[in-house]
Image 1 (cartoon, rainbow, N blue to C red):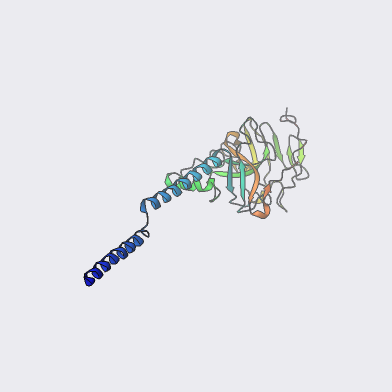
Image 2 (cartoon, rainbow, N blue to C red):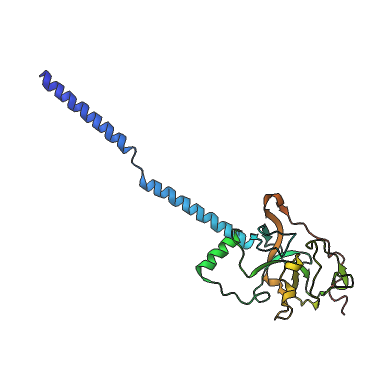
Length: 255
């Protein structure tokens, strides 16, 4: 009987150990539905944040990667600027001296034929400042607004707006206001724009003989460059200019 009791005791102990081991193993089996739900939540919140950033960029403040040296020294190649899309949203219009980003389709370039998924992805990356902007987007300084008479150059080699000479401290060192002579009147509702690096900028001057004469329609302006976001050493608001202070009203010098 003692032997039979010992066998029964061992059997109970074995069952107990097996159960403990089985229970121990079961606690290490991953909860797949919970892990899947956690991953799904991560993807959902990531997509939601991306959509929110894209909407903010589309309507409020858009990062813009400077792709060329046409605005040096004001803006350097690789700078990330922040374009204020609300600057002209409520009735105000671009003014002389403003640095603006605009869509040059129909004025600087012909209609763009870029389309498809690649263009969509590129546009999304550009709107977040992660890629160069579309080939139709440009950044320049407004020199003349609707009705202005803009001439270059006067006897001292300066730009003139409505008969008033303009000293331009933002020009690239060594550059003249323009190597191309011009004498134009800016149509109402359009802008005459130029780069600060005049010897390295394709701007309104390069389209004088084309349809539109290099004028940029105001409705094509995407926004005003108000801040520098990168590099960190240049972080801050974009310095304004008083170069156009004292310019006479449009039409004052040409009837």
